[in-house]
Amino acid sequence: MNARIDTPAATARAVSRVIQGLPASDGAGVKLTRVIGQPQLDQLDPFLLLDEFRSDSPGDYIGGFPDHPHRGFETVTYMLAGRMRHRDSAGNAGLLVPGSVQWMTAGRGLVHSEMPEQEDGLMWGFQLWVNLPAKDKMTAPRYQDIGPERIPHVALEGGGQVRVIAGALGDVRGPVQAAATTPLYLDIELPPHGRFETGVADGHHAFVYPFVGETTVLAPLRDTPLARGQLGVLGEGDRVVLEAGVNGARVLLVAGRPLQEPVARYGPFVMNTQDEIRQAFSDFQAGRF
Image 1 (cartoon, one colour):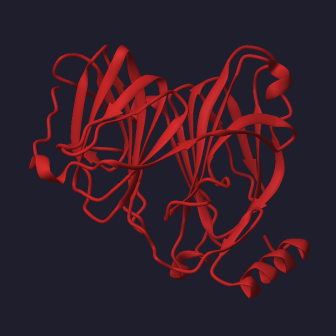
Image 2 (cartoon, helix red, strand yellow):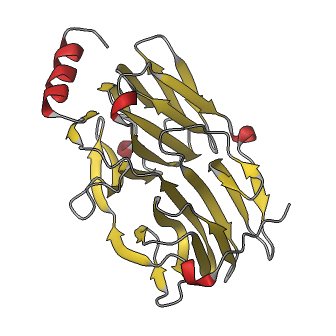
């Protein structure tokens, strides 16, 4: 199907900041690029962290992410290549394959691991952390394990396609449900010089992240080119217009309703106060996760 969303040109969002991802490592030495959750951009409410992991060298990822706790937020893992096995302290298990998504609500707490199920080849994907409001931080943990066949693809006029993971593109809705932040999560693939536009809820914080090729965010007063690995924080408005470079592009467009609440954060715990962080450590050490 074809999709086009037309809204007034004056409300197109411009890029307010360009953030360069930084080399980092996490888990048992997994090498990655940290885009949100680093000194240039500590958070973009409600988004707390964005990591891209991409390597065909087993030494960069083979250690995986052994058992570790979480409380107070959601993790979103989107796999592009490779296989990752998830297990948790409640006995849940799942396999992330290329094109699949896991949206995990840590809530009041769990201990889980994410380990590669391959010894060579490309491992490539993203992990996004999404904050939870105070009223939901101690909710029961849950998983939305979404296979690639459940993610709708929308064909674009002039070529290209969009994978709708969360939110909606026209009448097409993604499979992820996250009421607290009503997120939009699109994987947009464009041919050379291809153009894409869509509505984004006014007041929601949003970013664009090209992970293949280059793209330009078009706005009435300022067009901003973004190279692969550069995140563009979007300003105010109710639509986004993108144009791919000479070699085409593949881009994440993510938006969500800001919570506008205090954030107390330490390692794998994200709460509203330092007392709640201390309680999280106490509960974890006492085996109450």
